[in-house]
Length: 216
Image 1 (tube, helix red, strand yellow):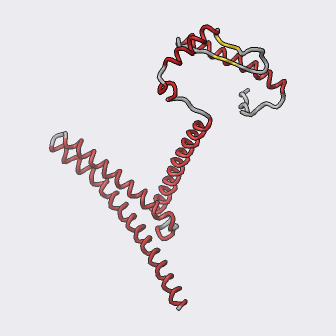
Image 2 (image 1 turned 90 degrees about the vertical axis):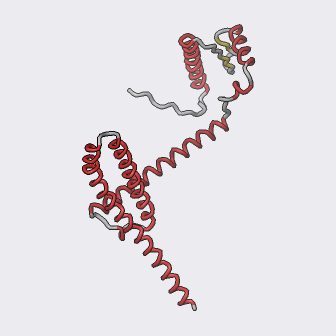
Image 3 (image 1 turned 120 degrees about the vertical axis):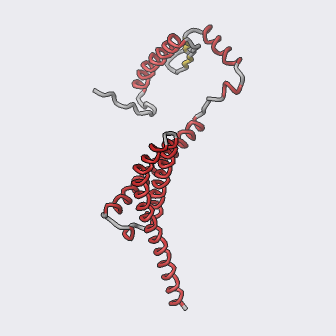
């Protein structure tokens, strides 16, 4: 049976809250002991709760005093460089989530434009049927493909240059021709999309002139 995810909220029932406190306190003290034993680092824990008459100090008050004195001897910059309060932690979390959301949105848009591009190449659709809002994104994807192809051609050419002249000639003939053919077809498709964008802008301008003439 899988463990249920604990809801991070205040426990209203006092008896349940007290039982949870005792269970969690044993767990955190056990983890502190493991950390100190396995890693050999100074660890000190202070727990102050309404369920105990005095604050509980682990492992002992003398050891806690040593940990605190070591901490106080550190420079202020070292003590605060990784310190976060609730506000800064939330800002950091929101910033990371926002960046992740932007990245996923960009990736999803690129996948959508790739699907549109391959539909055009396979004949399932044509550039005049593409929405105006998608034309620019589709053109950007095609241009990125062309840049990747050109970069690949340069890498292959440099690798061929390190070999003998005969191998270089054979490799150039066998590798460059198909890539050039792909590049030219993709360029033609990209030109078709650009022409569609220009035509759409011209149609809008013509409609605007007609409206102005009707008003006069």
